[in-house]
Image (cartoon, rainbow, N blue to C red; front, side, top):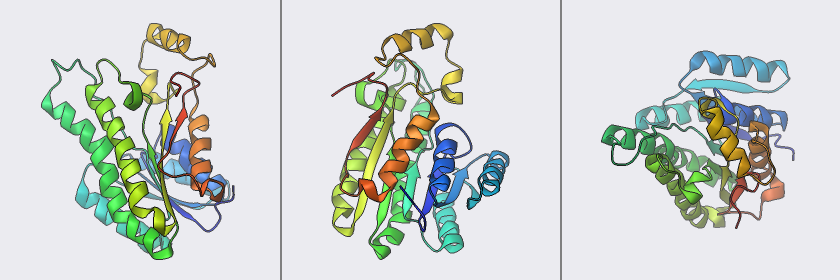
Length: 247
């Protein structure tokens, strides 16, 4: 699945799924623009990728800020010449039962998880159209497919990403650009580490494979969808959930 000659832009790259995706894409030969709010962690990631023989540059970015997105994508294209793989991974949670959920927490989650993907696709798409090759990969969630109590904002944002994925796939398919989503299930990350052991044990009981997923499981799916091997797949939601949700 060589990605040599390609330029990837990965959001939420400072930790968790985004970090592992950036490392995997670099391992497959892509040069990687890594973006997140935490500059220190990004620099650590760049050092790790470059020390392994890869090529990466850090771009501090708050994806919820449209002007920052415009400036950062422009800077990445100036640095690398193009962007042809976009991984929209940045995401946050602000969990609360809907009757108690504050409007600010609804807005923050939708802005960061969904609206940011629209911002980034809009800014990066011209580079892909120019070269008539592109891969857009949106990281959604099993909870965008099945819902989750206490996560109305998060589930809505992730379900929205699925609709966005399909709409973009139809818009740009004729230009040899694919747009797909990866829907992780229960993955061991900093976001899930704060959950109680009782909740985790209950979650594993719902997973036929009998284990929590890893960030590497998700990164493998992303690397595949970014490759030429996946050139006839678009508008698809690839579930990486151990069988937690089927169909």
